[in-house]
Image (cartoon, rainbow over the protein chains, first blue to last red):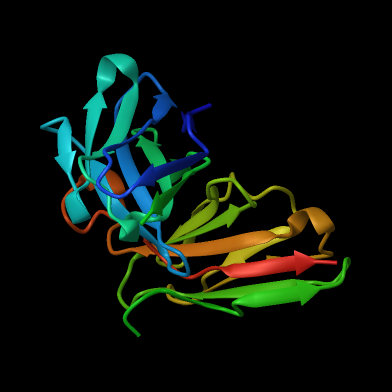
Length: 114
Length: 120
């Protein structure tokens, strides 16, 4: 069965620090990859997605992620975090055989110290 | 409304009672999805609909769980004879397209605020 692993459950950073959140998935075929974010008190919302093409994907609020097929990874990055980036981040994947079923990782809680 | 809405936002019930959770998707959205999210975990797929047709219910944990979307718009997730292990956040999402593998700016699931279910 497909699965998504997020290595860090809780990350604490100071403002202006660089961010990288790890995500690995287990599936050998064609995948689509997503990062969702949930800000405190708000809904889950899409941060960025990879379907095909350039493996470096840029999303909202200065986030980007790189799909490395050989490593089955889709890590999320941001060069300089802000206090407003405090949120929970979920990596997710769909596969060609189950396109409408999004499989989520367990999430990484990001806390930014002002 | 502008987004996906869910009601009630919070539901506390006693073990053995039935509950019905409602999802009102974004107007015109074709697909509707239900997820369950336990504390400290990511959302877990339960079932989804294209229009009124239930396409995949493989994620429903057992036959106490059922869902319907009779007119292709509002959906109800029903849990019969609730148990304490059913306590979780239940999330609904909708999508304007049937197949999110199609790519493009509309291939995204829009989530509602969720219903927090607590079974005592």
